[in-house]
Image (cartoon, rainbow, N blue to C red; front, side, top):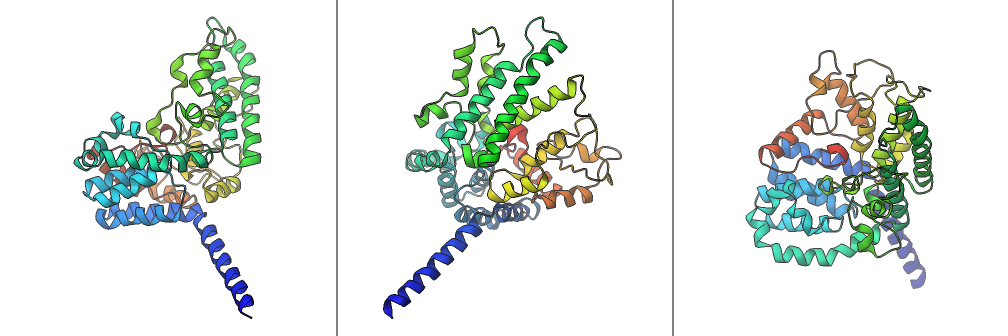
Length: 379
């Protein structure tokens, strides 16, 4: 009888633990919680109370998006909340932050704050204690493949001296088509390769991991004398202050641009979905799993509207207005209304535009880092 009761108790425990884990892995709830926290802070002005919102979310999820850590870190310093600052720094180190990031000009608010200076030795120890947690999460096989695909696209994407546009298209189109095909194989097998799967963009990540593979810059130096390629070393240096993974986006942008410009006109300039090679249902699944940030998907949609202001009432069109220029497009004559914009944002778990505008203004006013994500799309 006693053994039976123990077995039942164990099953109940495992079921509860599994339920709790499953709930924690639903990143739609993560984003809704962050949205609520940002409204509390930037719209209502409740900074001290709102900080606890970040802490509560970070406790529930092992993987978190670094942009949220950066904002919470800066706000904790603004509030002179040493305990929350160190708690967030610890979480950030578990998700890819490094001490050298504090030396970036974009991170000067943190670097110049007295609480940072006071705790600089402790911060170094926190990094040493938590870096391995981040590195163990990285799918090194997928990272190696994505770096290779990214690097060879960078080697190939530029016009060669004297190369005409038709010659360029004839040479580059099959290369970028093959590259995207290989990326799609990864996505089909593993899911969307972004922060959670392959970590943040880092110039020397493969060297640090000590696995068989090259960093992006290594591909340049190994191939710089190859006449098939025409590239510059700056193409292989990452903007680490974006605090995200951006390997996927240049590939799909280059693919669409190449097909836009060739004679087949596979994509029309008026096809607003041409950057979306997967369905909304797929991206929703990936958002829920934490494999892709909602604003990364929004960025792909918004790319299709460059030069073509979105108008309300067009069936199937989705525009999100993400990025650092949060007030530009919505103020264009005849463009989408804020009400319509917020309806579309809400469907993808993105905060209302008013919250993003208030957040951006606050961060910029106080000299804080405001733009994260590829092209600043997670701002």
